[in-house]
Image 1 (spheres, rainbow, N blue to C red):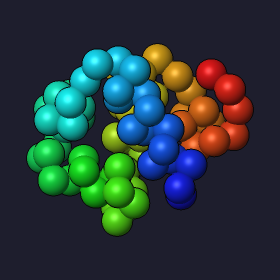
Image 2 (image 1 turned 90 degrees about the vertical axis):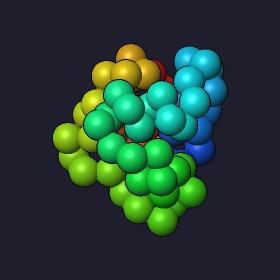
Image 3 (image 1 turned 60 degrees about the vertical axis):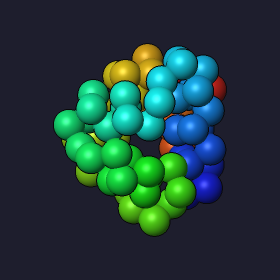
Image 4 (image 1 turned 135 degrees about the horizontal axis):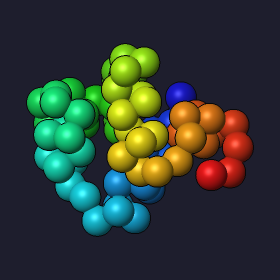
Amino acid sequence: MIVFQEKLKEMRKMCGLTQQNVAEKLGISQPSYIRYENGTAEPTLENLVKLADLFDVSVDFLLGREEY
């Protein structure tokens, strides 16, 4: 899931958000979100969809399957 981790970090920075901002929008703790970015945890399907909506991209894009 290295592609996912990189896309997540890239999109967060492009949107000018902190890890804490994203965690709050997902309704999870900052340490939980950090684990998504460092690859030690994977988001639930619900949170994956929330991330795609937050960054205005498709789930496929976040998973490295297509461009936006």
